[in-house]
Length: 553
Ligand code: N01
Image 1 (cartoon, helix red, strand yellow):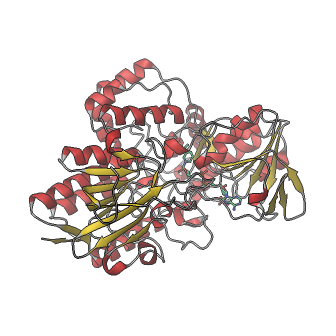
Image 2: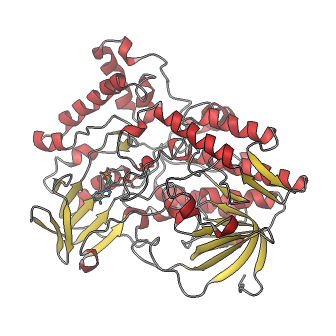
Image 3: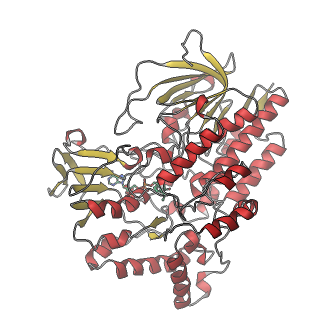
């Protein structure tokens, strides 16, 4: 629907983003009988899985667990083909869901929400949007000129935690004559690497997945690594139809069991309650070896204290370091690939032949931890020591302005015209990761302060969408016009998130969980470890008439 600023169209809710959070939210709002408009920058649903089309892109949560549970027929009819779903399959799944529930008609694609202002008089959000403009980094791209405005009672952010690409500000980037892309904004038509000189900058999950695949066809691949990262084998394989049928026969049981797991996944793993420090190193290594061979995050289930205790973590880290040394034939290259952080302190990566790739003749690893990239030139890039690397393609696998980036790039203004960016200047402050004081009727799906990226995202999304749906239903049934997190509840929630994070090893390294990858970003631990107690708290808040929120009649 086309609208204008004099007579804006009104919806009960505006949802920003048509990824997994946005499309399920739309479905939920429809079930409540509400009108809703979803805005999406891309030209289809899928969110992260729409944008991340880079070679090797694959989820690190198993297919049978990385899918919606809200509709029993949907979960039975969709057939997954591999243990871990590849990007095209996840995108097809999102499209299937959007078609099956007739969601497309309420989604406006190729549209960027630019501004959302809460009008205290009417109690409505005024939401401005504009055509999205194509660019290497959509987040920095200027919006087109034809702004539209609509109003809504509820503003629901489904922008995703890892959707605001971090493209480093390197001198000369605009002068590069070859092809250049960011993994999170990968071109739909793909890139032909055949015989080309390719540079990949970044060795997080995206780089580690892309590097082995690019190396297969590139003439030469140079990997520019700032920090080495721990990776363990995924051991992806075609999904056994019998296994799929068995899980589906008791799907509900697996879903419920997963909700009792810290990461809301992996109830089928063998979780050992014991300490690695209570066994001989040889025994621990045998246990790690078994899990290394079967692949996946079950590795972390070998002992209960790996993520909490430095000494326990060292044992697991030593095992992986030995594997890197055993795999990489050039000892100097192997040493450069060995991380010095705690294992899992940065997101543990599941890989396919990553370390083996460095044994190829056409792959070079360049350490840029001290010898940084000084400039990008028309023909490649130059490091600080003056070495020039001739390149035809540069792939930035440099990650995201995570958790807050996508939201803060929209000019969101609450009571008194206060901007969310000002409010979060010293780090995000939310209550339950769902509400922000001073911003009535704004809900943030998988917002900072909720488990989100530390747990199975689909489970977290469903839990949030269900909670928001129930909350809106409650407000309408009881005649409340607005809900707003209180300052006090927010204050104590932020303290709680910090307290819980401080019991773990997460805050010890420069990860995107802390915003440490973005120059100038305040260092605050943003997600909340531990799904089960969090979900329980959300239920309690709702049962106690939305305790910690102020409700306005
Ligand atoms: O991003 P990252 P990602 N100059 O931030 C380097 C999820 N995910 O896209 O560590 C040079 O982890 C940076 O170096 P450093 C998953 O949750 C999941 O890989 O900051 N280098 C790092 O090596 C994941 O954790 C899946 O020193 C620069 C890399 O770029 C999250 O997304 C797949 C630099 C960025 O790593 C993000 O992963 C993919 C600079 N200026 C992603 N800036 C699966 O499900 C950054 N780097 C499997």
